[in-house]
Image (cartoon, rainbow, N blue to C red; front, side):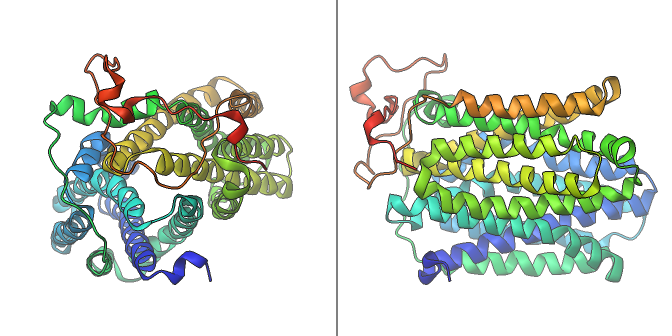
Length: 435
């Protein structure tokens, strides 16, 4: 058993997060299938994804909410409200009710913009030692990857067996169970106090913290670059299956499953390596592993391509563990929600654009050329971190420090002494963790 699971609060947190992710992912897949069945249109199914994705642009506001109220009641409330919001799906009985599916997807996106930063901030609240951050982040990423791998099978299988209403009922039950798990948490959370700053300053505080923390910003840049390159993989796989492996498009499901297994292994690997290598080297290794795995995709063999996807799939999650651990360690608790929201938005927005760019590149170029560019991009992301400052995980010392003030212009405050958390975090080279 994982050592952290000996702690009741961590077990309850993992239960709540896993149930929440399972319910979200399973219903999301089922909603797309439901829209396709009702209309016969792939565009109608794709619009479900759009309705879910657009509200995620409000992540900075969700992060502010997570930092301005107590996280435990927030997680309980949002899950219960979401359970009520899913209930109208029980009324869907034909194409005329398609709008209910779209509204539900929008509400799920809005809830996700709050739940994602709130869950990360809650993890910080239940951990007492900074040395636990790496192991905790690795374990939560592993559970998330495993749940994400299983959830589509649950959602599509349950829909095919019993229909959309059954999926909605199961999801309501899962959300209520997640709320009860969070309700059972016993965490000492002081009531956050208003800072008195303008709302724009408050919303941008997470981005400002990332920008001014010397050992955190390079990790974000490298991870974002690798995530952007990874987004080219989806359109590339279609061309690879047809032109390289000479298989039917349905073979994509097999390859994505292999990649998902790799992601699960990468999360486990990241949790193990973070304590040995430190965040910077873990992110470097993740980018390099993805690049090396992508090289194997150039070989027109099912077995070699599968091995490449298994390796490449492990790279990104390992890097995310490194970045998330550094963010947990270098961020004041009262700023954790907004910082996590800023990290998520910084990663997902370029990915969304890259999917479209990747589709255009595959249409204009041979897929092997795009793959070669992906390899170079991933390896350059790893090289970029050479010589950058390390994020050292130390014992808590300044948990009550002020959160950084953010100027609307993006400038630092004139007197850093007034806002100590705003000063860039410099880490001496001699104190860096050794591999």
